[in-house]
Image (cartoon, rainbow, N blue to C red):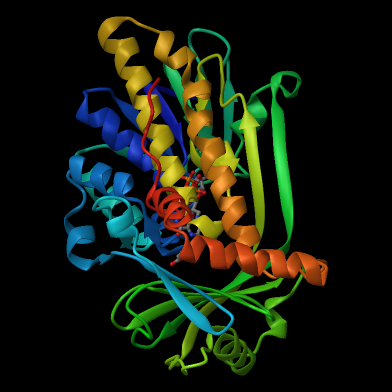
Amino acid sequence: MGITRTQVAIIGAGPAGLLLAHQLHQIGIESVIVESRTREEIEGTIRAGVLEQGTVDLMNRLGVGDRMMKEGHFHEGFELRFNGKGHRINAHELTQGKYITVYAQHEVIKDLVAARLRQGGTIHFNVGDVSLHDVDGSSPKIRFRPDKDGELQEIHCDFIAGCDGFHGPSRPAIPQSIRTEYQKLYPFGWLGILTEAPPSALELIYANHDRGFALLSTRSPQIQRLYLQVDAKDDIANWSDDRIWSELHTRLETREGFNLIEGPIFQKGIVSMRSFVCDPMQYGRLFLAGDAAHIVPPTGAKGLNLAAADTQFLVRGLEAYYKQGRPDLLERYTEVCLRRVWKAERFSMFMTNLLHRNFDHSPFERQIQLAELDYVTSSRAASVSLAENYVGLPMQYD
Ligand code: RFL
Ligand code: PHB
């Protein structure tokens, strides 16, 4: 078995793993990433689109933000649409100058991978059989098989960062007896499409319609991203392109008339929605970051941004450990992360409940939902709260 050594072994080359490797590199701490998918696969997976100001600032501080600043879209607000009428939330003004950046997650991944390889960093793609060992001792290890079927390799390290998403092996390496998992499932999913069409609006539109939620987002001047609320158990085979467009037109329509521009649909799929938190996010020398530790429904656009925030807390702890011999910040990693994570969980659930049609609701509950939409769009106090959460709450280190 081949053995190598590094300071921090990172499992997963998603936003969490890659952002962590870059920040560690910037302060002179070595890391190696192992990733179970190929580079082409991770660079081609369509997921998030909205970056908080803090995530954009981090990308720029790391020197990997050039393409994002050129090709990303910087929005000052977004729209909540209900009862056939749009209501703009001017997030820029309500948050003293913050922006909402629309730049696709797989473009972030491409930028981070290319820059990491240019720096001479190691990313083992397409590995198999990743396992964690001795995480509660002073010399943890990970094992993996290069190219899925090569001879087992072992990486000895000081710390393991579990950045392997919701289904990876890191979270289960925390003994069940000390792990509490909080979870909420929703009765709906999102059907997402990519279409070759010019933008139908300048900013994102979140619509609550009697038939269900719809979201109009964007990707580029030629490509648009749209979502529809569907039943959690629905099958994409039930959704012809015609049915998708018909439903999008209905749910996004306004009394004044809204021109939704159609184009060929070249990608479509359904994702389920859940809220999930694992406490603690650490065990011995293993630290979880991103979706490995928590999941939010996509309505608040928080998942990638939470992953970015976790890595900043972790880097601060690792820096104190290596540079000042202080383990206390690492010891408080879970506490500091979860304080912010729970607020993002609260906001994501709030946005989800506000915008989706719950077909089990009584007419009374439906009226309460519409009253809440009216309130958040007409009260300045409520709009400020909505906007500050949407652009991203500040990082609180203590
Ligand atoms: P990822 O991105 O899942 O990356 C984990 C990586 O680990 C690899 N892996 C393994 N590697 C080695 N060995 C193993 N055994 C492994 N098992 C897994 C995986 O291949 C993968 O490469 O987690 P990370 O880094 O924590 O990042 C989290 C984000 O990807 C996620 O939260 C967001 O995509 C959520 N999300 C959104 N977040 C936002 O901030 N803004 C948005 O607008 C937004 N929209 C969305 C979203 C997620 C969506 N879906 C598809 C769930 C919209 C959608 C539709
Ligand atoms: C997206 O563009 O993919 C997107 C935008 C806003 C969300 C979620 C996803 O809340």
